[in-house]
Image (tube, rainbow, N blue to C red; front, side, top):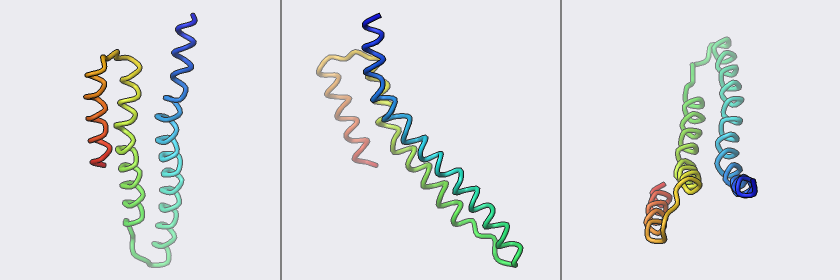
Length: 103
């Protein structure tokens, strides 16, 4: 029971760092897309063009943000389940630094 509670307490920062950022991105993207859809309807009513640039910008920005948080999420979750020695941990840290640098 004590080890379960210890792993649960250690998992709280992990949950905060891996769940909240994507939730914020999705939570702000959906209302923005809804706003852009209603703006598109209004623009069509008054004879304006049908601009897709705003929608495409919002979607691509959200996708880029979610992809950029993926290495940290995978690393954090894998550390909970995989026990590594110091050499393997160093290798994983090097791979993680390269992945973050490439973003």
